[in-house]
Amino acid sequence: MKRKKTRPPDALATLLAMPLEDRIVAIAKDLQSRTDTFKDIGAFELADALDVPQPESPSSSDWSFTSYAERMTLEEYAEAGGEVSEILRWLEPHVGTKRFKSLEKAFAKLEEEAVEPSFDFLTAKERKVAEETIAQEQLEASESNGMNCVASYCVERPGIELWFEAVIEDDGSCIDLKTPYDERDGKTMDLADCEIDQW
Image (tube, rainbow, N blue to C red; front, side, top):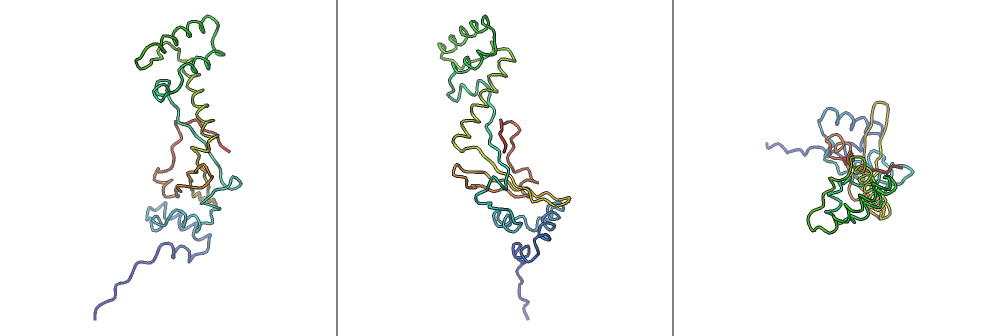
């Protein structure tokens, strides 16, 4: 007699058969052991199973939010079409009158030249001021347009932290949800080289 093939148990059904607290422990153990029994459960289904509030449209009362803008060099800013004359304006409050006159001439020469601009005439301090200002301006522009925003939520128990990360669209909806498996595997957003604002 031929043996009937048995289907492997559905990971989501297995998880949902447990009480909530047991689900949280099961995911934590699965992550740590790298057994990955529940890794292929859809991100939103996993979030719902772990009682994560509103994963499709995170709320600021439950989630923490981060707006970000990637930091740029002055050269990258100019290449992206940024106004070179703006840089001079940003530097004015940070330099003396004599230095400002010198910078005016250098920037005027830059605008006359058709080649890629080089800002080697700036001191390290002046470059830092200008690049920090660019980052801040880019961040403010992103925030006013509702762009470049991620939300984070942690399912937390003693000795357990299960992180979810949502990429937020300008209408407040989540367009991509990362799970604790993504966080473990380094697939969440790396904001190390970004200007950020958190709330």
